[in-house]
Length: 133
Image 1 (cartoon, rainbow, N blue to C red):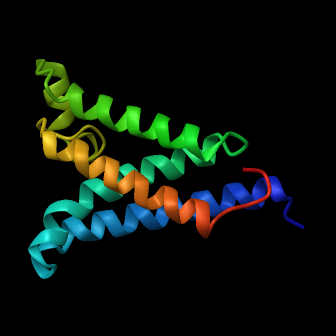
Image 2: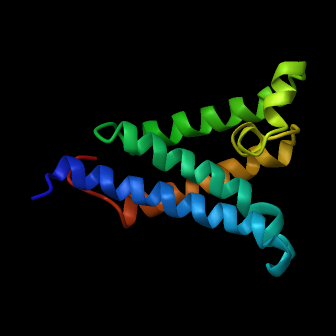
């Protein structure tokens, strides 16, 4: 029997994995997608994955706190792209480093993160809600 605590975590874990898979697919098969989707969805999905990850870790905290933390985290990662040190650029030159830290600062990415996080927050609030949050 799965307790409510683990059931909630399982839901967010699956949400992280699915969001990650869709985000990677949007990058991998971007040429097959409409230009708008190819250009914007990857970053929005990355930020959504961060939101679900925060909910996974802090399942008993409010959704609003998860929204703020994930937005702050996403924006800090984006702003960190303005820091160009050799060792950090070397990390960013790897596939995993580029996926996590990105490569170059874009103001538009900040907006994409807001939209992505707000979308998954809505999904969480209205479809994934549980008694704990």
